[in-house]
Length: 348
Image (cartoon, rainbow, N blue to C red; front, side, top):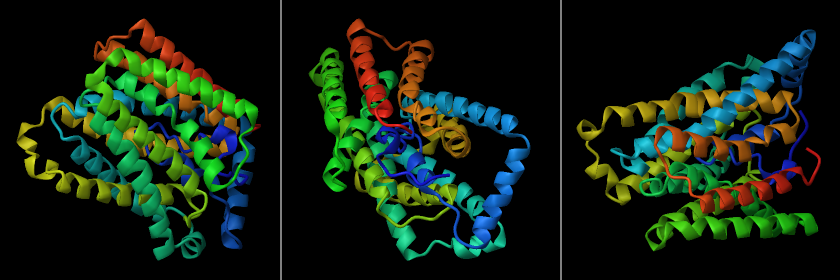
């Protein structure tokens, strides 16, 4: 798999579904290490070459899982925060998922790979920055906002992450945007302005919180390309979950959520939603994302950035009876068109 910069494929690989996990940061840039790691990767590629059609079908099936599961996590968050404080819920999600994924990701590789790709203090510091910006600030903002905002509306706002990635890439890496990129950003800004109108002043603060979280997610995704990270994508993602979950736990304690949290008061559907966020929403979808990224074109995988909001809007209307106004649909459609322009403006 070739090396990807933070901005390739339309700058959206680290969107990871907004409330999902830090998918595109470590996953998109994992490369075989020298020596035994390279030989292991060669043997894996040779094995996959025996049944390339089957491997491709499996990768498309994995992408379908990413489309549906990461889109559905917006609905799960909305149900979870009905009786679980948002920062507490997010911290439990990522601490549990990271604690499960980290030993699995660390021990499933051959001994030579484990020896050459052993995370040290530099990798932990790098992943803590990414985990804080993407999971603590980015996903934490979505969880906080969904106490009042509909799941579908939140998903449409988080679809703006590619815009922030393009702007952050321009500032941090001095990457040229070009007129198609600026046009896409202007279209996206118009879509956000349309979306913000029908919800009134009462939704102003959570809307700004989601947009601020999206800014943090996009900036952190670009910074991830400059920070030390493990070569194995699942290992890096588990480290992001653990560090991001720890920051979320600290924020929950600082805001008083942890002191107010009473497990006895949590409803059964909120517990089920939290379990869904941990297992399918984090562990299954993350594994499927890595499979898809290794076998499919970047532009194909990046389609989740605008499929996920569509899934979230549909499931929100179907399962939660969320109201879909014509203005919301119009604004969401404009945002998704601009995201598509950003994703497809460069070859993936």
